[in-house]
Image 1: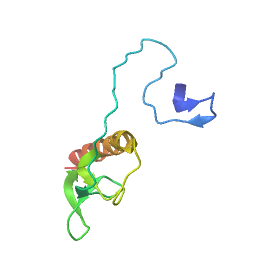
Image 2: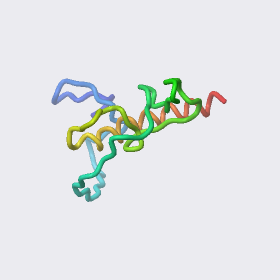
Image 3: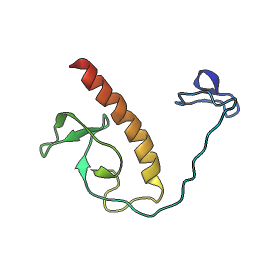
Length: 101
């Protein structure tokens, strides 16, 4: 997918690497059932919020340490997408915070 464009499905993608040619690498991933429904609350910038709902400067979080996204229950399989999406966002926001210091 060159230029983050997936012509086959007529959409753009956030993929950072062109996967249209080899080499390819793979890892084995097995299913697991585990998840926390608690943890720290975050906003859309993955900033951890204090008890007053205000961001704590320089503190970012993603994955199962976070809470509040699913309420009292969750849809199975969401944790993988949550780690990838919010983990990527937390990395970006953390780097931006450090660079601004």
